[in-house]
Image 1: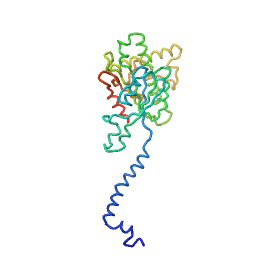
Image 2: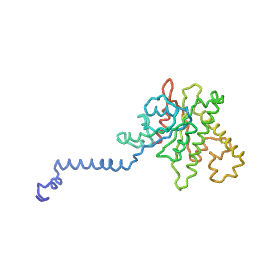
Image 3: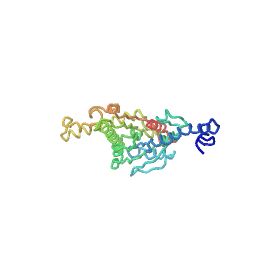
Length: 299
């Protein structure tokens, strides 16, 4: 039977029969869908974006991790090793990339998943956090948790309170310095992608906790003291700013280590830092909506 025969399948397809019309409609609808599934999804990244969780011991990092992962905070102990879990944004939290997506897009839920990496807060174990900042793997941002109650003057008047406040400021100072050096120390013409920093002021449910604006002010004052202290250490050792070469000058945070520090100085070197309050625990439950919204803005 030749292809020109009236019984030929090719001839039947070319004739305006109901079967030929149905096959044509099916092909028109299925081919774009097939290309979308095969080409678009294969080209998209299979590695989930990640957010790094850092901060001093006792600030509530692991409690936040379990809250984000399970929906309820669990009893925790002092972390001795890094821990990474997969979390998903609440349905009420939208991502920056979903602004232009259809609500019927099947890939929408995939883009709302991410990895949250918790790191130990003890001084001897902070190298885990520093390594994650200097060698980021699909890292989108950093959350630095602080205990807003410990930062208040009422709780920091004792020697232990003042020491905790100083250690928090030193840790935050070193994280900011790493982010600054990552941008200003780039040896390529293309600058590294910015890593936004969220300073999560935890335990705002406590009566003695400072509100987020005062947490920002307190941290700026403490970081100013850290800069002055380290500057004095260099001067006592016989090294002054004029003795530093260009590379060493980058070790100074913000405007060169002199005067009062402010987070606005970090914006001038390409580092954005924002302070948002909340609480993981509390009699009325957790209040972490602002932190979820910040994470959603990274994705």
